[in-house]
Length: 229
Length: 271
Image 1 (cartoon, one colour):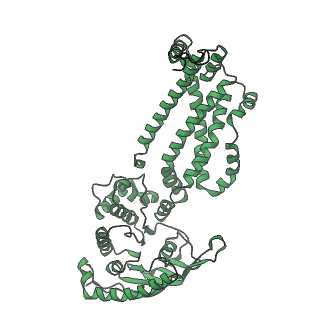
Image 2: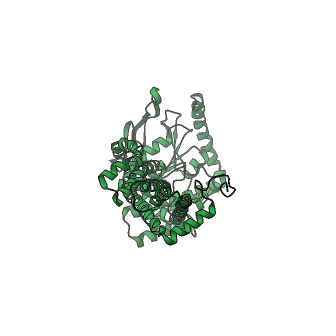
Image 3: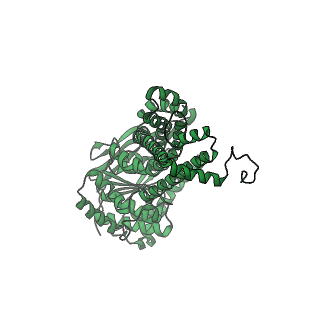
């Protein structure tokens, strides 16, 4: 609006119409949907790897005190290491290919997932655990039939949050040394002073985030009908 | 009248000089919850553990369940010392402890599944106990859809379905309203009269203790110990009208006096 009213130079802030037009050109003429697909693939890939390793480790930490004592100090420390700060290092190690992109997202999500899952599993209602023991549950039975099912909705909810953060990391990773992806398109557009395209890219990320969030939420409600208030 | 099951038969459960001291909080003095105390429970006994609040009766029950360790003494079940919780000592808690992610039927079958009972047999036992506690039609409901009374009936069925040697109940009807509570007492009494389980029931309600128990063990104020063990000679099957008989009133007068002394002591100690 500020641009349409002539208050701001359109070189720096494109108006919505310009944005949509350049967005359309991007999709039709420049194959932007390929970039979108690549970015989604990277986010999902890195996130799934982090979740597949992080959830079991977090659950083990929440269930068994010695395991928690062993990993907790390192993971608490690693959680504060900025994933984006690793990018130059990861480029040196893994090049500018897909491995590096996945690694950035993995580092950004993994430690968060581990700690959140550990806290969730560790805060399982004590009386439910005791009830299961008096019903003859073994230690393994407690983990499989009490700790995991009772934590599952909260774990899914925390995964939904972390997936949101993964979206931030992927764009940062793509801003530096990438030849495809939404972030790469944004840097290219910056060089061309095409703010319309930049804003379109940001909006696309927002929309994808919204959709994935909605899908996640619907899935959680389907999977855990018992937890609805 | 059925013969009363005597105190002299072989004890199923023996509590031998069990005492419990909790360590002090923030360098404070340790709390003595239970003085070394003993109780012998025969097969098929229905014992009510009656005491003022904070006397350690729940702690004693938790020790029998294996959820807490005694500082002194030991608990023997059929001569074997209790070292931890197990399926042969089923428990119903005061708080609602159904697994919220399981339906009523799945909750009742929890222990059976853990034991590895075959699915067909499991379904049969579940159906039997669903019927027994009057939850027909609610098998596939989740606990959050049930009233407090129905949740406790499910919890009772869940403990019974495991066929434990001893059933432990920690004020299971404490959170229910009076009418529901009275019905639950009759339900439990009916089940005991039919199955003759060995039951240890913790309560602070004198009427409840006399109505459902065939022995009432009275505990002192903290540190708790069992100070008297009274046989309740009311015939079975007991009907709720027994509550208005002179015999019932006589037991009530006696127990009220015993508990009153302890309650006053408890208040004086700031419990």
